[in-house]
Image 1 (cartoon, rainbow, N blue to C red):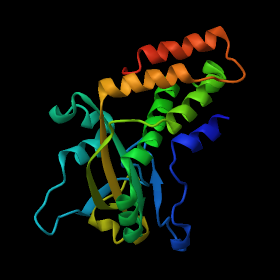
Image 2 (cartoon, one colour; image 1 turned 90 degrees about the vertical axis):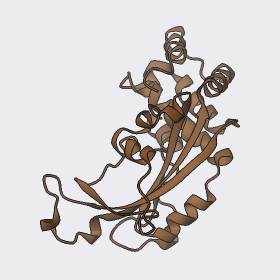
Image 3 (cartoon, helix red, strand yellow; image 1 turned 120 degrees about the vertical axis):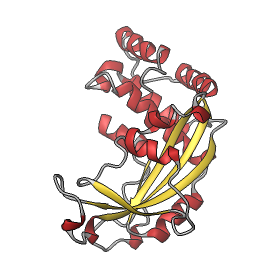
Image 4 (cartoon, rainbow, N blue to C red; image 1 turned 135 degrees about the vertical axis):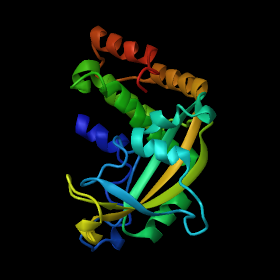
Length: 232
């Protein structure tokens, strides 16, 4: 059951635009925020990025996300009162990635970002969330994914082109590792913290799990709700 929930909320699509596939590497994979930003087969180096030829630089929010995820973005002065979410897609088909970015809608796609992060929060301190919270866990993630969240704003987007090296390697002596090069597109979405918490509490109270969880399981879920912001 837990694995099914992971599919519902953590992964937007396992492989998108399947008709474009056929190469040795995935052509396009999109996720609702990568748990470990920048994960790859080994160390990497950014060899191209959006607006590089025009003299542009990599935005600070991208640098912080690549190193520390959304938590890094939320320490920036501009986002201290907001939660930051990043939708992430990668592959070697730049046109498909661009179309994904153009089609991304905060109104339609933010619920999956929110559900993925809620799931991660409720899973962070327990090895088996289904046991800890009973049927309430899956019902909550589904409700968060289906809810009409209000106030999410698309702030920015950016892409980078990275070369990954085998673990323990790196540098020019590794040669051209075309099969380990990848485009990555990131879309930054933010929402007011107080508004998010208020909407989450409404969703939480509306959940009607079946079968009914035990009192201990309901209490466990309430404890996380009451301190959602810790480690969120």
